[in-house]
Image (tube, rainbow, N blue to C red):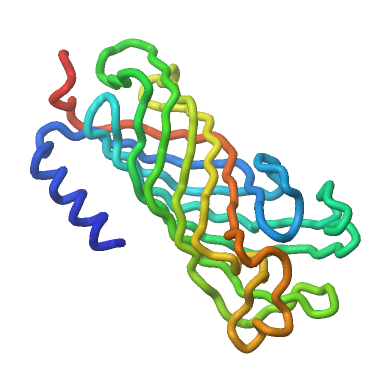
Length: 228
């Protein structure tokens, strides 16, 4: 995946080498987990999340985007409205570090060199990979396997952004991550623990959600799509 991202960026740099504008900044907000442990609510931040963002604006309607986000992902059966989970009373806490890359699409033109105050909703999607600790549950207690795994996934985010602070762009975003893994919550442990400690629905993969605010600073030459 890393080689693909570098190749895509190099191709774009050839086509737009004299038409580049950049954004770099931070993400701050919260996270919540959707899986076999904890609440089944889709948007319910219960742990802090913080990250870094970089965007390469290819036009006024789309941008290439890279991010790295860290969160201490948490889930608690006592917060669920499912009586079976409440009775089971499992608790999940795992450090998660996510890398994502993809494209951001704006609903309307977002020309940063127009000189106007502008705002637009946007969508983001691409690929993600998250590093997390491996666990299983022994007598109801979260127990470490002393190993880590990578959960590959697809980020799907919707947001709203504006440049009312000059070169600073402020946005609000809700981004769900569908993963191709059912190991984040310890549902399917490594093979040596699988038979004894699997639980929940083994046919549903894990999700997690980041909800928060982005703040990026813009710099670079006027892009070719700019009139001025």
